Every structure is written in C-alpha cells, then in structure tokens.
Figure (cartoon, rainbow, N blue to C red):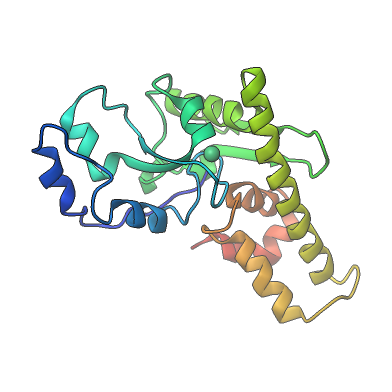
Length: 222
Ligand SMILES: [Zn+2]
C-alpha cells in the first residue's frame, strides 16, 4: 500500500447531488478525478486497470449523507478488494493521509515464484496498522474459496510484474549486459513510481536490500 494524494477541491457536483433525495456520488468528473488521483490503481491491492472497478466509501456511509458524498471518503478499488473489505474493516490506515505513513507501516514481501503468498507485516502494533495488515493479507491471499481464486489472479499479475522488474535490475547491474543503462534506469524508476502497479511491493524490494537501497533508494522519495 502506498500514499495517494487526493486532488482538491472536491468536484462541485457532489454538494449538489447530496441535497437530492436520490443523488448520485458518481456525478460529473468524480470518476475521472478518482482514476487520476489513484493512478488507475486499486488502493488496496495496487493492481492497475482492474476489469471491475468500484467507487468505494473508505468509511462505510451506512446511510450517512455526509459520508456518502464526501470527496475525501471516495476511493478507487477493484471489486475483489471492495468485497473483501465490505463493512468489516472500519479502523484502517488512510492511504490518502500522508501522516498515516501507510507505506512504511505495512511491509510487503513477495517471492517471485508461482504459488507464493504475499507476506504482509505490520511494522508497529497500532490497532489501525494491524487491521490494515489483515485487510491486505486477505486481499492478496484470499478468504473464501472464490476469493482465493481471485487473489491468485492478482498474484499472477504481481508475479509477471515483479519478474519484469527483476530482469531490469539484473541487466542494470550488469550481471548480464543488456541494453542501454539510462534506458534501463528509467524503466526501473517507472516501476518504483507511485503510479506503477504493485509499487508498494517493488519499493520494499529496494528497501529490504542494502545495496539496492544505496543505488536506488533516492527514487522512493517522491
Ligand atoms: Zn484490489
């Protein structure tokens, strides 16, 4: 999980829709603004361009008009993660609040081989960190039989992405000279940018390795 900056001010249509008896929070440019702010990624699993997209209420609105139409409460998620979260998780770290430091508080690890799980560790014992850890674990690894299959699809996309990232690192550090160094570095930077799919996992690969961190740590600062 990584931090996403929510653009301001809120789309003007939200205030108008909130006054209607059957107002629609997906009004005006809400969808395109959310897509841009979340870099087309599900904020929970970080899959880019998922087939099924949900506009999610970070704090379940449960009929509360303010929560239903509050711009700060609207998030971009895939259907799998939204269905995993439902109203079960109500005390999560907020990835749109910089002070919540979601990236450093949730340590993600994934070995790039078939059938591996995503390991999610909380780096402190704050109840919100622990609950977010549980949500990410369920999203990446599944709960019910069907959700385990969906999670396996997410991990397959993750595996393909990590393998590409791994190849670039391998070539860049000249273990197998291949391609132009500047081009390789730009592609590595692309993988480490917030907008990249599964950036949270890839950025931890760099943090977890002293040599890689020394060479590429500056690209985690954006
Ligand atoms: Zn997701």
